[in-house]
Length: 240
Ligand code: ADP
Ligand code: UDP
Image 1 (cartoon, rainbow, N blue to C red):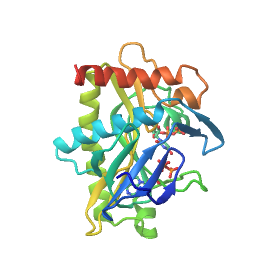
Image 2 (cartoon, rainbow, N blue to C red):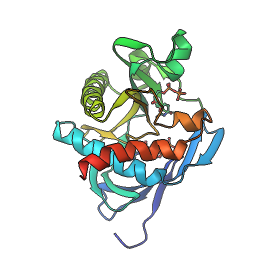
Image 3 (tube, helix red, strand yellow):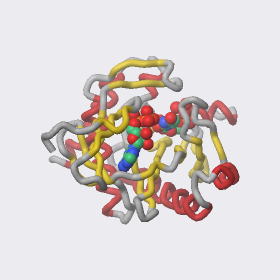
Image 4 (cartoon, rainbow, N blue to C red):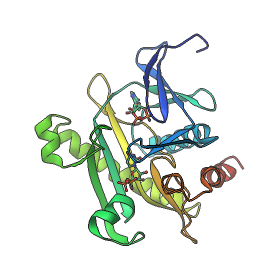
């Protein structure tokens, strides 16, 4: 793993490199942060390492509950070996409590507890601002088959159940989050990308304090501290 690797892709929060094994790739988590479709840019010191370790921790937990993920091996603080997949061009959003764009769109107060989880699909396109789409768009454009969409929806709801219960044990409410899925060469689907304070809304169960990227998006201050707090709660207990 020490030899120079070819950069396959540089995104807003991560870099993806080729690995020695062509079935794998190396993901490097950056401290860079963007919001408002890339219009707002900044850096959150320590974020890359926190997101790397939290993602790997959540993916390992999900694997233990039977959810197939891309996770292969943590290489160091910021880098992880993952199974290389063809990403399904959808952002799959699961929501328990109304916040962000849902609250705005439906005129709901942030914090409204919905009677059941809500799933949304967005077409993954920075240029278009990730527009929301439904099953009909997805099938008509050939982004995923109806069978794949139903697998993705069932997986997202199961992941929501597992993570919601797990986080409650740490005094954290899982408000909403974004997932990405990918296909292995044989066509089977895996959970890919990341699960971190960049891609989830985490609220303190007692105080409602935001422990996620909304502090950056909304210029609330205490951004680094929020990432550190989520990390501390989970890893202090896990590592004793
Ligand atoms: P963005 O592309 O939105 O700026 P990132 O900075 O997080 O996002 O870049 C990481 C890229 O790697 C994303 O496009 C994501 O879809 C992709 N990706 C995540 N997991 C895998 C994987 N296992 N195989 C291939 N690509 C992946
Ligand atoms: N999200 C994400 N990437 C995106 C858009 C959303 O990770 O490109 C996550 C976001 O962190 C939140 C959830 O998906 O946990 C729902 O986001 P929302 O649609 O409310 O969008 P926002 O308010 O961030 O514009």
